[in-house]
Length: 310
Image 1 (cartoon, rainbow, N blue to C red):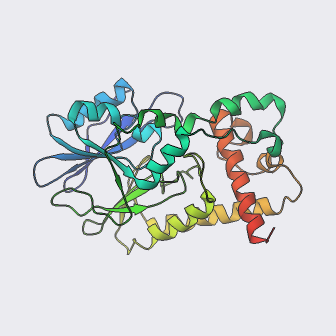
Image 2 (cartoon, helix red, strand yellow):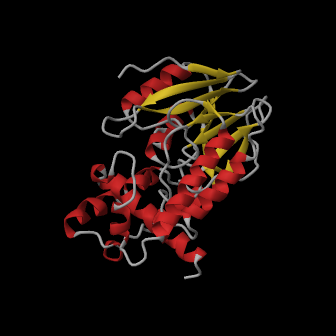
Image 3 (spheres, rainbow, N blue to C red):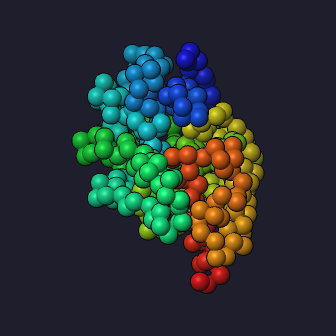
């Protein structure tokens, strides 16, 4: 794959299209290279750990000193290359405190999905059990010697000359974060808000709360930042405007899905999910995408039951 040259996004901010492995369904993830006033660069989401991906990122960085590596969430296509980049540059790896806590829960063991309760046919169970640990597979690399520090809501990143603020945005994973630079009118959204894709929810290990409830609250938290000139820099696809409208559309999608699930009283999760509309169609889902669809259906059922007082 030929990787495009770094693309200037704003003053001191460049996007790098980091190639993703074939078969993932997306051609690239976005890494962002941010200059500080001391001549260093700071990397947000260094991408996958493959040699091709890291070569693309290194070509974009060149000989610049890397001041920090910030991860929006722990999935491999965003965080997988952080360890290698840290080893090459000595830069600190930072992520949200809730994501760091999630790593601890993952290390303690991720419960297998309750396929009996979901009513999953026997012939589809092996692929779902095999896929259950895939979203959190990079967690094994993020042991204490790799993660150097945690970030908290409203914290300003230590990037001299810039004011990038941490916005906690749980939902996609429990400790997902966005980064907001009000003065520049920029919002780095990771996988929280993408221009056309509806991100999967609850893909960061066990949680104490319903990821859909968390996600809806996070959409509200991000939407209010858009006063008309905000530009979103997503983890996939291309930068876009209209963050408030996109957040409203995503919220409406999930609320509509909850209503659809609530109307299927007595059906199993498998039966409900198979009757819903999915991008690419239900029959095309397998492995991780199928597991994500079933988990989200179960989450919508939980939200619907709570709303009905069940």
